[in-house]
Image (tube, rainbow, N blue to C red; front, top):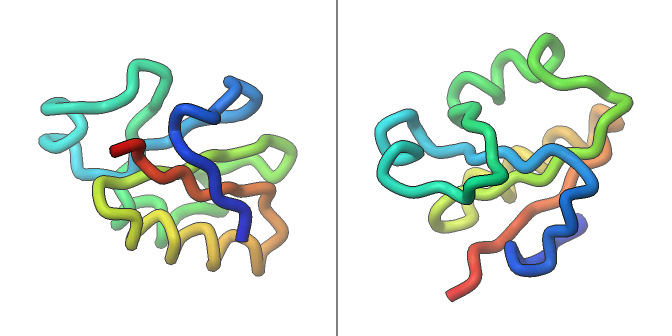
Length: 85
């Protein structure tokens, strides 16, 4: 599994915040779009493009780790992004 820190993100793919809409509104990286984990995990086939590169982050890293593991199996170019502390 590929993993980087948020400070290493180079704008070379789609940055996705996996938190719910409320948490996203409280804080998110300005470069990120919001697709909540619960929505994405069941609909990735229609929400994601296999020709694009995706970077996923969440507050604690557990949702992004699970999602990246799943999407790798299906052949997506995905990376887990860990928030800098």
